[in-house]
Each structure stands twice: as C-alpha cells, then as structure tokens.
Image 1 (tube, helix red, strand yellow):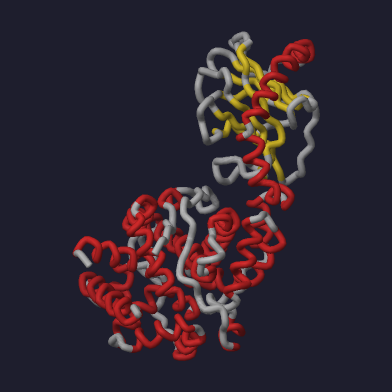
Image 2 (cartoon, chains in turn blue, green):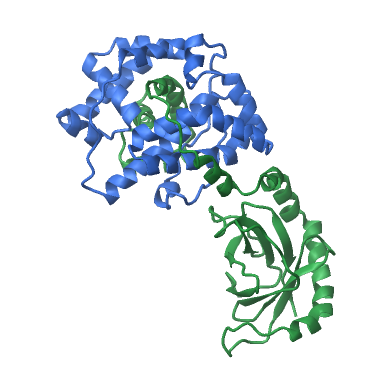
Length: 226
Length: 236
C-alpha cells in the first residue's frame, strides 16, 4: 500500500488562525470508497455520498476551476462546518476552521489523486484537523475553558452510518464494544475532546481513559480487517 | 506487529480520533512528514474512522464565509492562472535572462527619469545605488518599476507608471536571492513606491517581483497571486 498523507501542519498550529497554509507535501491516496449510496445518505449529504462527484470536482479544482470549487463548497460546506462547529463550539472559531480548510482544499486539490482517493474522508480530515488545532490552541490560551457538555449520539445518528459499506462495517464493530468504550470513541471523534477533557467530563482517571481508548481502537482495527 | 510499530499505529489512531493534546498532535504531524509508515497508518485510520463523521449534524456556514474564502484566494482569474503562470514565469531561465538583459538597457535609458523623481523621504544617508533592476510585465515590455539597491541592502523602488489595482487588492514586492527557491516578502507596495531592505547584501542577480495579493498582502508568506512585474538586479 502506498499511502502518503501527512495531515496537519505543526507550523499551522503556531500561526494566527487566518495565517499560513503551508503546503503539505503529500498526495492523499487511499482505498476507494464505494460510489453507490443509499437514498438515506444522499439525503443527508454525508461524507461518502457522491464520492465520484467529489473526486471529479477536486480534479477540476486542481486545474484552477473556480466554478467547481464553488460547487464543492455548496455541497460540502454545511457538512464540514458542522464538524468544525462541533469541535470548536464557537461560531467564529468554526468559521475560521472552515475557511482555512477550504483554502487548503483549493491549494492542495492538485495533490489529491482522484484515481485512488477517498475524497469525502480527505475533506473530513482537513477540516477536523484544522478545528482540532484551533480548539487545542484555545485551551492553551484560555486555560479556564470548560469542555462542552456531554452529549450522547442519538440512535438515529448512529443508524445513518449503515448507509455506506464502510459505515456499516464500522457500525457493526462499534456494536461489539462495551457501551462505555463505544461512547468514548464516538465522543472523542465527534467532539474532538482530548484525553484529559474526556477524563474530566466522564469522571474517569486519565490513565483509564487512555487505555480504554487504545483497547477500543485495537478492537476496531481487528474487527475491520478483512 | 512489533511493539514499536504497534505503538506508532496506536499513536496514528489517537491522532485521527483527535484525543491528543496540542504538542502531541504537533509531534505526530511533524513526524508523519518524513515517516512513511506513520503516514500510511494515519491515512488508514482516516479511512477506518471517517464514517463517524455522519454523526455530526451539518451546520450552514455564515453567509459571508464564501466571500471571505474568495478574498483569501484572490480574484478568480488569478487562481486559474496561478500554477502554470508561476512556474513558467519564475522558472524560465530564458525569461530571466531576457529581463536582466533588458534591465541593463532600460536602466540606462531610464536614468534621466529617475533623477527627476524626488528621493523618497528616508533620511539623508542614502548611498549611491550599486545595483538596479527594471521590473516589467514581460521581457521587453513597458517598464513598471525601477529598483535601486545600495551596498547596505537598501532597496528603493520607483514607480514608472501608474499601476491600478482593485480596492481589495495590494501589490507585494518579493526578492528571490540567487539559488533561492522561496521568494521573501519585502512588503506591500504603496503607489508612491518606497524603500525596503533586501534579505542579503549580495544583490547581483537577485530577482525582484511584484505580485497581486489580497489586501494587506499574501496571507501565506509566499506569493499567492500572479507575478505582474519582475526583474533581476544587475550591478551598476
């Protein structure tokens, strides 16, 4: 497997929010996601929906097609902004994260390999990492910042996962985890909480949180491997 | 899987999941730039965990966000031309040879013009210029700026024509020393020209260019818009 994808840039985390967008070296390449989707996921414009459309749009962006970029924005901005909002919990910071992510998408679209790429996952990662960097910096700059209130995922949200092949597999594997561990993984991913924030908000010792997460991740990987 | 490889794989998983703190994130990201195994592990975890993104409800971004993104990227025509334009313009040796040849001739021809302009108000200690460059839109094209550098690395830029830019754009001056690959910003240009300090005293052959940027200058530290004018410093 030839994957190359360094994801966020340490330099970025140190620059002002509207600052640098250093080029990432890598081309993103990954297992191709299934193109066909069910009506359910199309309706929600999820990460995997319209994978072939996303790939085509990114390809056109790489050629400097601003109209394609606008279409990509219209298709993906609500989804990506939702991820940024959930992680930053702040309208202005989320807007910064989404802004930075789209700038990065435009500039790095040339590095995206449409033959092999999982475009939805690529976009998801770009905005999540940017939002995480911004959220972490806020923690350093505002030490008294309170982590967001705990929020359980609704069964409805979880059931949306099964609309794609990959989602269905992950859903099945998550189901095999103990409920506490599953909740930990879901909260970590959706809310972008650090180990220590999870420890505080769940009232569980830090070491326990870390080892629960690791064991859950190992179990997921094992369950997902063919 | 060996212990070390497993540790890296778990680190990659935590990075993608998002549970690392700021310095841990930075460490993983930095390592991934050179460590292909770690890099691959991160990419694989992204694919594994990306279906979780559907758990988060979409939120319509503020209506002004698209405009802000457009502003950061510069005018559409800029973006469409950006890659080929930058490559062909900067990297063509023939172009630079042409410009620097033209620079000699034009600098001589323009000497009178320059003498007629008032010296920028930068103090009385300005030395005689030791190198100069003519910045033009294309080899042999009409000159837009005359740049003069003295032995202290002080660069004075004289506008030779009026360059109009949209109110949300600025012109930015860049220097690329001989053998350099990354232009360094000398600052945003004012209509009246101005004085800047060159990144190094050895000026001969240094390339100067003026690019069109969002208001306030490039947001990235590198030219993001097209290079409108360019020239190479030649010793006088």
